[in-house]
Amino acid sequence: MHSELPAVPGTTRMPEHRIAISERGSFCFATCSCGWYSPARRSRDLARREADDHLAAEADPG
Image 1 (cartoon, helix red, strand yellow):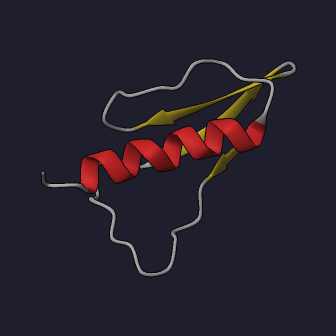
Image 2: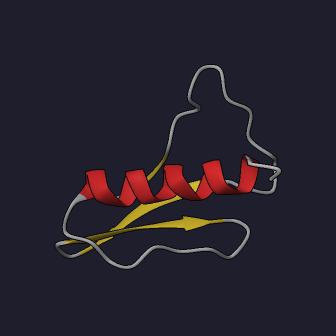
């Protein structure tokens, strides 16, 4: 299964950061078009939260 995270209202994302959530067997992981990826997780929710954390860190100019 493969799905992109929906845009969160009120946030802006740089075009070079596109997140995708993928599954392999019972594991789920997030990848970004910039080359970042999360470790394989059994929890889809955790993979999504890690992807959100990655986007927040990239959006923070400080």
